[in-house]
Image 1 (cartoon, rainbow, N blue to C red):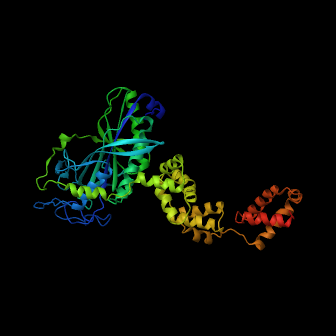
Image 2 (cartoon, helix red, strand yellow):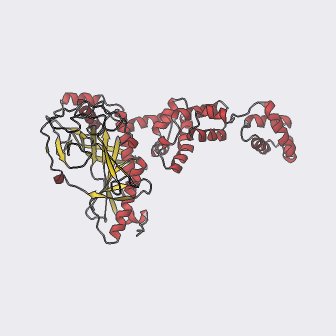
Image 3 (cartoon, rainbow, N blue to C red):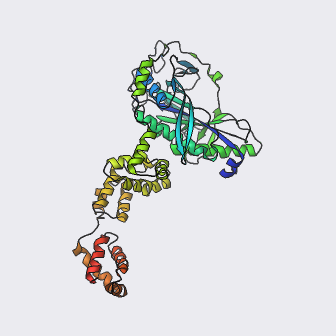
Length: 497
């Protein structure tokens, strides 16, 4: 049975959304959280494991100091208070990818707490409260095979890879975020985008969502205006910025449909489907009591030295919001123009393109124009569209040198996105370079004059603006490869204008 969903405008007119985000970040340490196993991505399954991360009897964990330092730096960047004393806890649950049948995490005593992150949405600043930033270990990875969906239902067998088990994992939990109204999906995306940029600036993680080093769980609920907050659902492991926005929007529509029909929302985890943009039920959502937390007996508490914390705070790099303000001033952009760059996710791409030799205006033109259009058409992030900042700068360099005009440059860019090579290679291989040699263009100019005697007479009589029509004719004959300025000069010279 197909359910007809209400229109989004109708949903936000009747209901108030409350969102919250739980973001998991794999830290870029060399070794795992409790042992010396390497953390690099990839490798044959179950080859980066040892008795500690496999939870074998008699093995004991030892905390990774680099992971603790990275977590404190994250907390400081998010304006959090740093605990003077805290400890790890055991979070008990059974799942095949958890080798110990419990996860070493933190519960009521997180390392960082009570912070915030400001994000820009439609020219307004939205402050997102951070409830906690705590340190734990990642699980292994389960692969369900033999079915159509890649999930356990319908699969014929399941395989477990423990390479990821024990990798340092930071969980960043926001406070509930009410009052965003119709902008709730955009606020969710803006928050994860800003958080990713903060983490990247700190150098604590590669934050590659496609590889799972940054994963986001999206909580969504609806309530009538003035009523208590509704029952929330948690959409698990959303793996792209675009999907964060889509997951919030999808759950708002689905929950509104249920509530409109007189139904009740079930507190549960849900799975987001990239192909359809829909969510489907996972399992009922556990509470803290279900996990039977208790202090981890094999690890000593953490008591960060205040002097050390002060040193870490003093050494924090320039954070993204301040960095963007400096770039905006250097690029000469208005607030609205900078917001367009930010909305497109193009700040770092434009910055890298400028560093590779292009002007800010040219870099912005390509990334916010042709490349953004292609990203939207194919449903990918701008950074994954198929062109690099170095290639865009090289393309613009060919335009600046007069070897390509704008039309030819767009054709070359098509080849770059298709993976045909560098702009110079594509220009050469496809013979797309602008023809500016007067000898090569003279025949085409004479042909255009002969074919358009009326226009030629107007030019001879002093109406030089009419030359544009003849320039267009030559450009058509030369498949757009003629240098328009040279062609115009030749036309005027031949007609004595």
